[in-house]
Length: 323
Image (cartoon, rainbow, N blue to C red; front, side, top):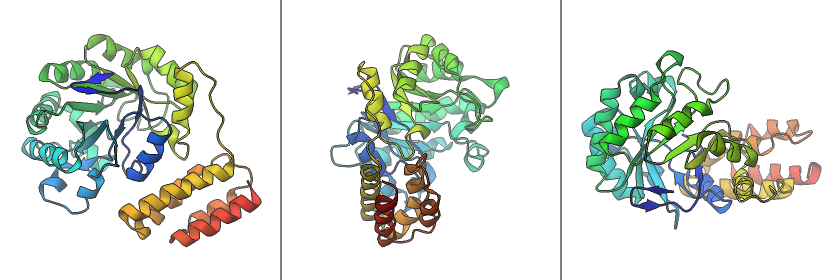
C-alpha cells in the first residue's frame, strides 16, 4: 500500500483511539505485527495555543515509521498551523484528519464526525491541512455519515480525493450508531470502487479471520483494527498469519499476557508519569483479563491501581492463582 510518497509494507493498521493508542501501546502492537500506526487524536487548537499536554501525544517511538499524526478541529487556519506543528514536532510521515470521532463534545462542536455534516467545510479543512503539511501526504478517517439518512462517505471521499487527500480510512458505522450494531462493510466497498487512492477498512475486526473477511468484502487496501485489540495486541499477529494463509497462533499463556501488560504500563509510566499511567492501567489491565475464568477478584483489585507497585503485586497474585 502506498499513501502518497510513503510506502507501507503491510495491510495492518492500528486505529487511532484517544486515551488508548499512546506510544506504549503502539510499541507493543508494532512488535506484534501492526505495520502502520497513528497517534491519538490531538486538538489543533491546543497545538496552536502551545498547550503543554498535547505535544507529548505526538512523540513517536524509535523507528516508529511509517506513522501518522492525527489532528482534530474545524478552524481552517488553526488546522493549517497545527499540521505544520505536528509534522515538525513528531516527524510523522503522514498527517491524518479526524472526521470520525463520535463523542458528543467533539462531534456536536462541528469537529470529528461533525465535519461530515458540512461537506464544503470538510473539504476546506482538508485543503488547509494539505497546505500546512509541508509536502507530507494527508489522509482522512471518517464514518459512513452522520446517521442512516445522510450516509455521504462516498461523495465526501470523492471530494477529498479531488482536493489531494492521499488515502481515506472508513469506519463502517454512522455517527449516530456510535459503536452499536454491525459495521456495514458493503458501504466501504462502495467507497473503494469510487476512488483511485487507497482505502482502509475499519469496523468489527475481532479475529484474524475477520481481517481476511473485511478485505475480501470491501476490496480495501488495508484493514484498521480498533476495539478488537483492547487487551489483545496479539490480534495483529493472528491477522498477519491469516492474511498470509498460515494458521492463526493461539493467545500466549496468561502469565506471558500479564508480562506484556506490565511492560506496557512501565513504558507508559516512563513516558507520562506513574500516576497517569496507573490510572489508565485500571481499564487496560482489566481488558487483558477478558475471558479469564475466576478473574473477578483481580479485576476489582485492578480498579484501584494507583502505583506500579500495585500492578506488580496484583500480577504476582494472578500468576499464582490463575495462570
